[in-house]
Length: 164
Image (cartoon, rainbow, N blue to C red; front, top):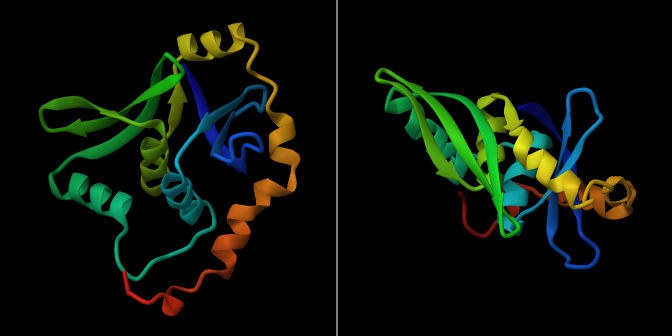
């Protein structure tokens, strides 16, 4: 299993879909995951230290986990099937470790909020590498990678029509 950090967000120029870019701690492995726009915003808010006056969905879920007496330990990307990644949220509870099936994008958004490790199973990395899908460095270098930070930098919660 390889521990990863969030390197950043980018926009896939072909599909116009957000990419979550993970890197291992030694910066030898770059691991991209295509995610939804809302999930990208949830990750970007943490990366850019944007605070909302009310809890967003991932904050609410993390608060609920804590109120129920569980402690987030890690998130793990455990499988890839038919091009879809599968993750698990690992929790410590009074009755032992619990694993909850989750999308990687939601898992990473929670991991950043809970300050817990993000791990990718070796078999997932091997499968990606065997397909020759490891050269994503160029995606990160483009101007698109900075768009998320710019959007959030210009965002002022006080300007919203409805308060969150």
